[in-house]
Image (cartoon, rainbow, N blue to C red; front, side):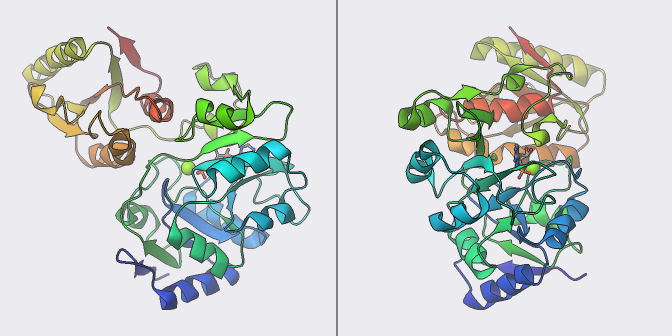
Length: 348
Ligand code: AMP
Ligand code: MG
């Protein structure tokens, strides 16, 4: 299949959007930008279309998809019950990087929900995504547009690396703004529960609706604790090189990593280092990449997956990463980083 690359970096293209909407309506696949990561979209209410997403990604079929909508009223057609707290959160954070889980309505196929009786819904804060959803009929199921097991795509070229020839169209809307996936909150139980951390953190949610709990499985490294979001149980992504996160005071972290770098270089190896703008010039060698500035946490989240993809393309013996426990989005960044490192982290 020839994949159409629709360049909308300089703004919407009505003709190409109409074409994209037709592809979705006809049961095809279109990758598109959102404010979090690039999504791989299909008509959420068409079970054959949704099934194609699993095929293109190589995604396990028990891993449910998030349904993207563009109008608040469309929520009531796919969710069987919308609690008042969810309406309050939608009012505060939609369009935005927040996904909520509801009991599903009958019209949502089990292919979309990975066999679950619930449906995950989000309204993305991105003009191209919103226009595509409307053009495609109102309901687009979309996981991240990467091959299963690779980092989520934050630029159209990442999508092309994984999806070229497998899907009908990739819409290039430039680099994304946030770079880590949406916060997922389960609204189907008594107390809302965060199943996946994202830009919208626990404190921000609690300011709107009061107590919100975190899925205890988020803090467990043990494989026998089952997370409530099926997708969170997968290793997700592991860099080709072994990865170690080093946490502690800045100068201790740098001197620990420098010590390791010197040893590896002496052994003829080439280590990789994930640093920040503030620290990148203080490492003794190896391949140093800056994630962004600690004074601008979105610059860090935005580059996380891209930096990991770059290291996969280079041969490094081992990756040492600083910790990035920034105030708002730090929990989400660390959740992804710790998973990539297979929980290998030391505190000094
Ligand atoms: P992705 O879109 O690739 O970021 O993956 C979607 C995430 O949402 C996965 O971790 C899924 O497990 C999770 N998810 C989607 N629908 C549900 C649901 N009904 N219940 C729990 N988690 C869900
Ligand atoms: Mg994903």
